[in-house]
Image (spheres, rainbow, N blue to C red):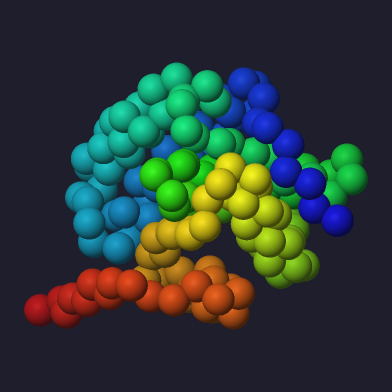
Length: 150
């Protein structure tokens, strides 16, 4: 059984370092940012969205646990009557073992406790694994951006 526990400041620092780098790589891979500017843009975005780290108002950062085993992280933000999932990451060694689906179920429970009745998220087009999971558990596309390289 998965339990979401509030992320500690120490866990947050480790998460932030990896998340900034990973987000920069994803934005570059998707063609949104140039590689030479991606790391700074990613850093700026995280500073804007989480100015007070784990204490940022209406933001909830959790570590996912299976017993004593830390399997991943989740970050959601409350926005009026909806919650936006900014990040879900199951650590690589635990991927493909059902933790993603379990974490998403726990996120919904937490959201209901916060009085939220709608969840939203963004997924990069090239992340087919995540897209399949989200569709499997009931998420529907609301906007689709497309491009063609010439």
